[in-house]
Image (cartoon, rainbow, N blue to C red; front, side, top):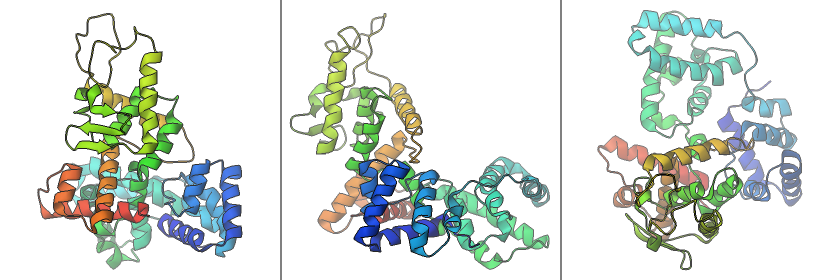
Length: 394
């Protein structure tokens, strides 16, 4: 039976959808709605060619099984890369890594090494029933990339560990069939599309869909915080945003850093819902009259004297939102406050590029609110934007 990597299988499925005819597309739409249980918006996004990376393994298995006959492969082969590892004994793999740490002098960094090895044990060795030193370059890239990090510095820290392990395996006389390819791996070889699909949303429409699903799981104040961070208001600035900064009627918000920005039409409903939430909760629940801050504090038994909501409270609420999103079995979102802000900056940069034909270093520095400390940091950030655009460009 052929073994496909997730990267290859997802790429082939996306190509199949892109070139398929009307009959197949209609059948696929009905299948993902009625059999898998995706929403109309999710089903439409699949047919419109949006990335499949944001869907859970459960959904990807179902899609692979449905599409396998049209792709000319067996369903078992198509979905094998998305299934969990078989229940096999991990001891041989674990013992070999333990021996490596003892003999190679890496015990001083055992914690970092074990974190890397434990991840690869789960996503590769137990699934493929072979040690990572026996992997092909594509298989190992797939395994490392599934760690869901968009930070190339993390990749730079992981690769030396893996390369030292490969070299130790060679010196120990172990089977390393693709030695040259594995030792030539670079951070730029890694595929961060899966991480981007889970940590960064495409734009206002996808953010709207996510937050609409979260309605009722968290309160309206938490949801509006997520919207504001995506619009470019940092969690440090949120407590000081004023009522007068937000105009629902004009679809505009005066942000501390970017100045006046437009609120996309599809996100206005969350501002309306937040206002309704404040006033429907009763006069005694929120400090509506006592404060001109946009984010109202809950009233308490002690005098609050117009003090602002704490940034830690905002971060905790957004973390709670992220946790609630994980109850949905069809997606793999991991939306942190940092990810929400970066999503918004990526979307702004993409619109700048569409309007002017290019983005400059100054655009990135301004919209991402970062400073390039060195050339490698600039290259890494541009790679993230390039990957974002490859997933989400129209």
